[in-house]
Image (cartoon, rainbow, N blue to C red):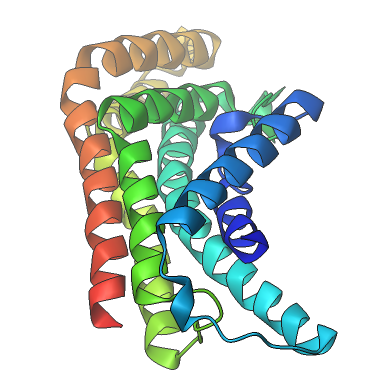
Amino acid sequence: MVLHWVRCLALVGPLPVFGQGGTSRASRIALGVILGTILSLTSDINTFDDPGASLFLAILVVKEALLGLILGFIASISFATMRVCGHIIGEEMGFNMASIQDPITGVNSQLIAQFFETIGMMIFFLSYGHHVLIKALAKSFEIYPVGQFNVDQELLGAIVLFSSGIFATALQIAAPVFVALFAMAIALAIVARVAPQLQVMQFAFPAKILTGLVLIVSSLHVMAPSMELVYDNMEVFLFEMFERS
């Protein structure tokens, strides 16, 4: 049962949906223990071989923690896609000079990046992404019973390939707003070149910020399905990973 706890805690630990702080740590531990207890009661323990010595037990703990961290990392990649999307738009809006402390991760981030990550978390729960993670966790105990997980080169290659698509996916989601702001920046540059007496730089930043906010609000109905597709790809990858095994 303890090894079940280890895998579940390793999955819950890196997820950004619980925030930071003492209350967050307590909720993560409680959720991991509850999930581990339930899954241990429904798993087949006949396949478990007692490792005996403490050293071999420690190796099993590391293996279980590694598999849980891999599952949590794949889910975190999906949230990172939302953050990168917000950074791309925020940079074009001129918010690269201002940042705030993100209460979820505890690090400084742009306001737009935090907004998109929050929207991404809402879509995550609305699209039942938490159900997908629980199903994937239960599936992992079917494919990799406690003590039988081994990292292979094919699995690492698949994870690296999945992670490498963060920027491309984020750019696709941010494309409607990013392209419009980029075109606006070009137009302002042309105006500043043609008529320097207008002093375009005085109203360029407020205009870009206002335009960016309007574009974000007006294009959320287009970006939301794309965000939901990110979590669908996460689900496909998780279960394909187990089928490959």
